[in-house]
Structure formats: C-alpha cells, structure tokens
Image (spheres, rainbow, N blue to C red):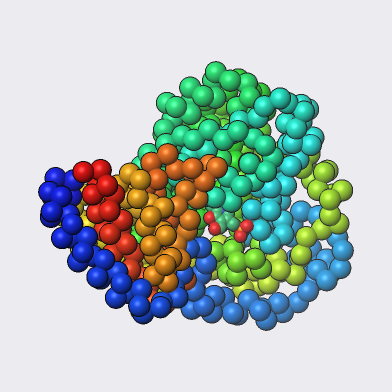
Length: 423
Ligand SMILES: Cc1ncc(COP(=O)(O)O)c(C=O)c1O
C-alpha cells in the first residue's frame, strides 16, 4: 500500500507535474458530464413507458370514478399494492401525491404547527434538535434547516447510525425530537441498518415524549447486487409501545418516473387518523389516476419486484464501471476510500482530509459536475472536507467511463497538492 504522505517533496513535485499534464489534456476536451444528482437515465425511464396508457378503466375496485373528487388517502388497491410490497398494513398507509419529500416536509410542518397526538407544536418550543446520521441526503438537511431545527450529526457506521451516540443524545435532552433515517441503501453511503440498529431505534429511551423516527425508505426495493432485508420498524416499535414514533415514507420516484410517481406515508393507526383529519383540510384528495395507472401497470407487488430486477440490470454495469476503476486506481494507495453498496443509487467516497472541495472544483473546471462537497452533511459542512457523493445512474456507460476517469485524475491531483502544501 503506497502512502502518498511518505513521498519526498521532489517525488511529489514530479507526480504533480505529470498529473497536471494529464488534467490539462482532459480539460482541453471541454467535456460536459453530470454525476451530480441521482436521476435515472432515459433507458431506465423507458422501462416504465407502459404506465402512460395502462389505465383500462377509471372505475376503481370499490366502484369509485377515479376521474372525480373523493378518496382522501388512497385507493384500496394502491394501498394493498404497497402494503404487500413493504409489509405495512393498509390501515397504516396514506397514499399521497407525487413526492415523498413533499410528505416529509408536510409531516414536519404539521409537527411544527400542530404537534402530534396532543403534544406541544414544535414551532412553539425554544429549540428543536434532530439527529442526522451522516453522511446523508442534502434535501433532508435543507428541510430541517428551513424550520430552524438544530441538526446533530451522528456518524453512520456500516450497521446504521452509531447507536451508542444516538441513545445518549436522545436520552439526555428533551429538545431532541427525532432522527431522520434512510434505513436501506442510504443516500449516499448505501448503508443498510442492521436488525439490532432498528431494534435499538425502536426501543431507545427518549426524553421527548413526542420523539419521531422519520423513516425515509426511499430505496427500500432498490437491490442491485444482493437483496438486503430491513427489519420491520412498526413491529419493532409496537413491541416497546412506541408505535406513534414512526413516520414512514416511500415513493415510486426511482421505480417509475421521478416527480410523476406515487408517494406514501405510513404511521400508527392512531397517528394516521390525526394526519387524515389535517390532510382533509389541506386537500380534497391526491391524484387517483396516477394511483390507478401504477396499479394497472404493475398489477401487484411481484410486478414491482420484477421491474426492480430490470432496473438493477441497467444500473449494475454502471456501478461496476465506477467500482472497477476505483479498485484499479486506489486499491494500492491511500488516496480514496469508497463504499460498495448492495443497492440504492449512490457510491460514496472519502478523499484524504481537506480535499473534497478541491476535487469537485477541479472536476467542474474539467467539465464534470459532481454533487457539491459538503452537501452530505448538515449546513453543507463536512468536518473533514472528505466526502463526495457519486451518482452513476444518469450518464450513459461511455460518458460515465469518461467522467470517472476525470474524477480519478482530480482526486490524485488534489491529493498531491494537499500533501505538498503540508510538506
Ligand atoms: C433519501 C431520499 N429521499 C427522498 C428522495 C426524493 O423522493 P421523492 O421524489 O419521492 O420526493 C430522494 C431522491 O433522491 C432520496 O434520495
């Protein structure tokens, strides 16, 4: 294993000259590639085109005309579809609009304005703190920041958040009101919470009686290399009489068409009743035709599972491209560490400390857009300036190869610059 930090100044200067030449040659190509957001490629979207004309009848199973007003919280058949897929009873499910992020935002807004099940509205409290396993999803952090909540970063281990830390924080401060989790193939690390982690989150003592577990299972069926199972958070919480803690989110954004899919919120029956009451004031009902086309296209949960296998077949070669290149360039040196997720949408990398921003800047100047460095931490502040999220889905394979080549040169150049500056 080559430790670049052990190289002499002269060796580093020579390396830098070579890398700079390589980088300049790439920059001269004036590339325009994007590995920033986790957007599906057109080939993935094409797999769902059948959904566009899948509706054979607009009369639902219960004889309701889906073209008209009515049905606040989801068609029976759509609830059943997701109930079977996710193992959540239909009685706990509300089918929402097109975006789970929207449901998360609204859930937090409801807590902020009204509280939950008789608790004091969070907006009336001096301080609200939310535990944020890191690295995490920038849009989650943006919502929490918008509401003025303090975000407490907790390190994500290969089994989920560092639970000793989570338990300690939740047990000592009443202002700690929740934890925001992406429990399967997390964004960006691809971390899957172990059974023990889920059990401990369900069981833990919290000073706040209205503590909430925001369970954003966005990648719950997005297996790529192998199928990881997630322990049932509702069953775990019910065991410890903590079922009102859970706010569960899911959507078909990364299954069919992002922004035009169907999103879901699930909570205890008691909590769902309260949410329905408030939702009924917010809307007359969500888009039922979208729900109908989803059920008409997939038929049942197995239909979605089969579809996910086809999506995985498209994504796997792209993940392979990135992982193989990293292995080739960095397995014998200490410049980059990376995750090897079993599913989801991202590969997460860590440069040596203090390099992530420079890598992203160099890549941008060479025509490759990456997720901003720091985006994976609350307030955009990665304490080690080290983590970068790689999203391999959107470019085609040729573009991706080129983008990863550029990325690797940028990592090497930024690292050598950093190490040289410390000599
Ligand atoms: C963890 C996570 N949650 C939510 C979303 C957004 O989901 P939706 O399109 O349903 O709002 C994403 C999209 O990348 C995500 O990664």
